[in-house]
Image (tube, rainbow, N blue to C red):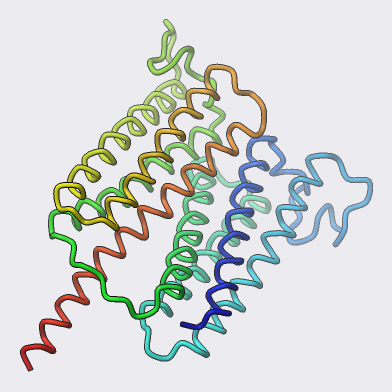
Length: 300
């Protein structure tokens, strides 16, 4: 179904992944003020002259984000123009656009008004929702009108719960970064220090929540295996792979992974994890709906 549109959607999805990684680079290198308090200009200019490293990092992020925003607008218009009978496809195209817009507003606000760490932490999570919407849109375009096996009510509820809980964990991780609490704890997995600060408690709280996320992932995988739902089981195995690596990179950061690429890898892994979980949650919803509709038609 609409192969060219599906390929373009895949390209835009990869572009959003790049935006997320570049945004992580801005945070990691403390380059958020690289263009001063000007937006969309940089130090009052369209193209900065004699830029510092921080300015180049922040400015390049703005440029790529701007291009990605235009691509998402084009994708949304194209989707609404050519997809006539798929309400869900249009919904995810619209969600990708809306959350991209919200992310841009928060990003601009962070530059102009110097927002709090709690507000800045929302930026990554909102970008993540836009990425997940694009990923689901791409998969739906490639799948076409395929009918899927229904997911049990119990598994469906836990897939919803896992998606929501992941967003909470992602927020706490983003808050750790913006608060500057990445190295507030000595040791891993337990903070081994005599004096605890607010940053230490935030860091330790994120670790506990991340650990619970691993166990929750294992539980949902167990439910999928018991139900012998191959699509959900395969997705959960992939999710487990990404979340274990994500926890591993988190430990690596604390224990000495000071190189910029380590936290970027950390963000990349949770992005992949959230994208898969979000798709599985929607899959559970639409498979129930498809089965109900098929049963209704048979009874007519």
